[in-house]
Length: 463
Image 1 (spheres, helix red, strand yellow):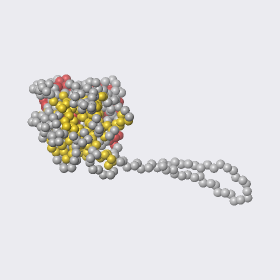
Image 2: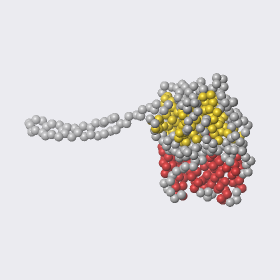
Image 3: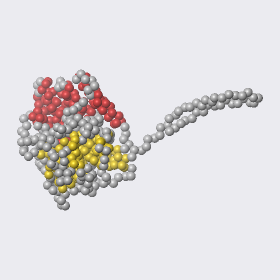
Image 4: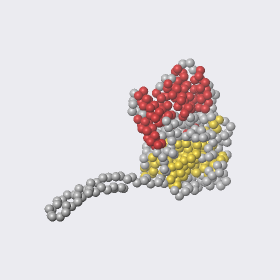
């Protein structure tokens, strides 16, 4: 069972465990420890080549692998985790190697690695859950979905584009670290720009910064609006002191007729905790969000807060174990009484998978994995339904989600469109059942021709 997760990287930059400030880097290990992974990679490679002892090599290989993993490059991470393990780093490297294989949908190899890991730690059933998940994912991949179709949006860039939310007039607002983002500095976690909110016309493909007064040189993203788009909640990660780590907060602003009001941090947020991924209920009374409070179930969890009559927000409430787990639950979104969210712990295909649950009275139903093609071995998250979009009669739902599955723009976060249709009915199954008719009776002796022996009847019963 994997309780400590390591993929808080590119697509999840707004919920980093601690978004660090810039310091003078001494070596690759220091850069890795300060979460400057883009800086660490080149330094660690050079140091690995110069290392003279095996123990030094396997340590540097492990740090290099983890840096790639944090940057959202599981293929490169996998190679270096294997190098670290082969050089004697131990079970930790083998465990991460197995998870990186699973994330790349190399399920047969991942199963082998998990079995080897169980044998090495002397607990052959320790990773049975992951082995079963790999076997299930293999079955799901082989099935052809008749309900969902997906396609990447044409305006994805070479960097990270993620967390779309429906705006109005056929437009979406999303988070991106493309070069047009505010500021000239690079974010040393990713090596890209700091992230901002952008707006895109889905039909024309035109992409522009959302609002220059809201985007800053810090990281902004993962927005949500109220029903009439007059209220905006979004995440900003910043520090009041350059010598302190940055933390993420949820901010609120209101449309005042011609401009957005100045953003204000929500009142319930505590120091030393990261908050983000806000999602507002349809009636505007409840805010769902993700945070890594020590009072949660583990990792990041989904919480709720109710709007009070004075406009402030009430004490956050932790959602139950049907939603939250020992892993990370993030990116909630709402569609009526259905909650969509992503998790890297509930049985899935690899990284973050998208799940849904329904409100039943005061409880939530057991979660359901959306399966391929929405989910993959890679990170899939930020599922949002678009009821403003025009759709054919046979389409039940259309909307967007994010995935870092490999495609033409590379293995970075990209925006995808989905359509969910009514699945065609399964063809009737014909079952052939044989029956033999047995007649009981007696024959009277008469001077008549001998009757013909009755022929037993057989018939095919179909249903």
